[in-house]
Length: 113
Picture 1 (tube, rainbow, N blue to C red):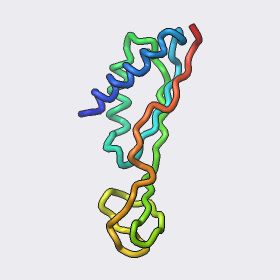
Picture 2 (cartoon, rainbow, N blue to C red):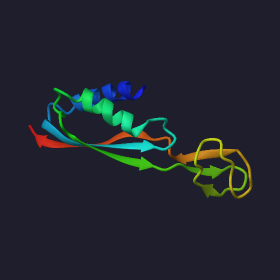
Picture 3 (cartoon, rainbow, N blue to C red):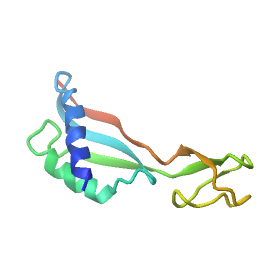
């Protein structure tokens, strides 16, 4: 379960706000459908990892970023359900990912120090 290590990394990022925030009340994450991150497992790991930190009890908002690909053969964009799906327009497999591989801490909100 790599979500636990991701949660620990997020706590590390949140600690950088300790000098400017007394308490973190909300954090927003972007998770792409191709990122191999299970949202529920991450929420569970974060719930445990945030205990005793300035973000203890913070609301966790998750934005799901849908996969979007550009077909390198016909130039059409499409939303594949997985990494191996061919272009529905021409059947080609060559593509460039435009979104969906995302995993980032988008924003942090809290009470100023």
